[in-house]
Image (cartoon, rainbow, N blue to C red; front, side, top):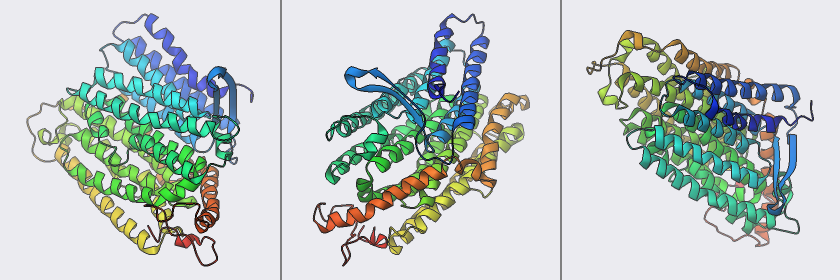
Amino acid sequence: MTQFPWLTAILLLPLVAVAAVPILPDKGGKTLRWYTLGVGLADFALMLYAFGRFYDFDDPSFQLVEQVSWIPQLGLNWSLAVDGLSVPLIVLTGLVNVLAIAAAWNVDRKPRLFYSLMLVLLSAQIGVFAARDTLLFFLMWEVELVPVYLLVSIWGGAKRLYAATKFILYTALASIFILVAALAMAFYGDTVTFDMAELGAKHFPVAFQIFTYAGLLIAFGVKLPIFPLHTWLPDTHGEASAPVSMILAGVLLKMGGYALIRLNVEMLPDAHIYFAPALVILGVVNIVYGALTAFAQDNLKRRLACSSISHMGFVLIGIASFTDVGMNGAVLQMLSHGLIAAMLFFLAGVTYERTHTLSMEKMGGLAKTMPKTFALFTAGAMASLALPGMSGFIGELTVFIGISSSDAYSNIFKVVVVLLSAVGLIATPIYLLSMLRSVFYGNETGIEIDSWLDAKPREIVITACLLLPIIGIGFYPKIATQTYDVKTTEVAAEVRNALPVFAQRRQQNQLFSGGLFAPETANSQGLLSVADLGKGA
């Protein structure tokens, strides 16, 4: 059983299942709904069984490795593997997609196409996290864009074509940098390889790493999203249907953070030392800008989208902290935000189905007629504003501890980062609580809502499936952290091991001195004092 291609089965099951969708006898879409949900549940169960039975959480290396020559002429291999970074994110992908399929229960417009796209999207997302070949990674990254574009442009809101076009232009153009970087790294040196493990063992010149890192940062920064590459996100969320928004916020944004660690940090550690202070600064900008921009949004889903921009800033700070705790917090924040954002966007869709509006000004007093929805929405908002006992609190706290305890930055730099980030933390409960007040409190605005239109059992179950792990991680973080602790510790150690080499090269003038983000690292002995890193940034 250990030789069984588990990852291939997990990846291809939804894709193969699409072939039966056009020929399924169906009346009213009921058969299609149950079939698609069954495929998603089977795939999720397969993930849990394979990882629980055959994956060793104490081993940071790639496991369940599968490699077959696919297109030899292009050097493309069907190469799949998982480690501590990819396993929790694949499980998150399976959970969010299953719940998104269940959330799309009322889709009656072109249901065959809709459910087919949902299954293709599931396969592509798994492929991104499981690919060990950079070309295969790029291919899966591109495949994922097409279903999202179609799902937004066909089943979106009034401005769906504008939002879908903006999404595809931003993400597709940025993806070019992934292909260029993959080819450049593969053909550098005496051997040609697209294998991530072999690329990580190559010794790239620092100048090469810096330019490659910059290109990948743009590509992944669009998806994360990093200011100022974020503008597609509020538009896309504002027009996408609730199930698509759940996947966008719950999984797709995490692809950017995952890729930053997988390609930028692991393969280009010297360049990461240069860019780390910039990532911290961009993370702070994301936190503050996203929180302040959320205040200006009357559209419920656009406010939640700006909140996502703010929360993903913590991921950047954790990645650039140079500490085990910070890197651990970055992954935990991705998992936590994936659950919380999926829950909030689903409940926003539930509210929209009853009110037929996303304008908070046109809502009000809904707590009386929708008490169950109000209670669930309040729980999601509490998790998002980092209430103790929720996963959001643990994720953000871990990142703060990581950057505060880092000896890679000066005390002044860390104090400024923490203080500015605190602005976002203070603003978050204000805009979330004001959102609850606008929607559920105040005077009724005349929208006709019958009490029987409150959250139905199916909707309560979907929300509970997200809320339970949010609370579970909040009270016992080891549920999540034990899956990736060993890996994040290894990644942080690899970056820190590059610091002495970095200092020696600076002494030998092998790096361009005084670079915009290059920290002062040289001391009188010519070796790096970790505490000096960032003092010049």
